[in-house]
Image (cartoon, rainbow, N blue to C red; front, side, top):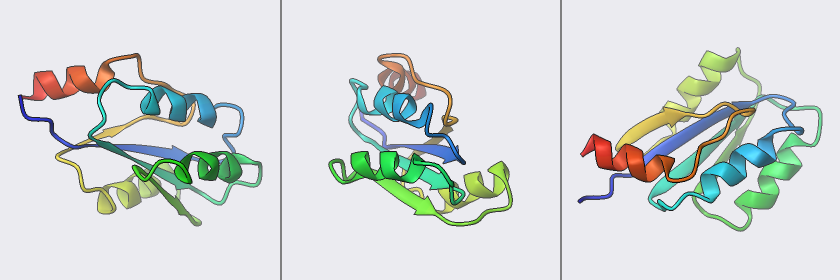
Length: 109
């Protein structure tokens, strides 16, 4: 079975209370062929500091931090910067269950 690259796009604004759990739920997947694109709308809390802590240690994480026109504008920026075969959205206060990405890849094939 071919492993397709999955682009996971997360839009966040002032998500310091939940973004770490979201990131960890993606990084702890049993499937490794993904990129996590985090679009931050210039958060005023410690969101970007939390995101940068993980991005420094994992080159699959891309960060775009700039003003946007709302969630759909942020999603579109994520799509434009993605390189995956598939794109999915995981909001900054959501998480992925274990094995989610491998299940998506299996079912996509």
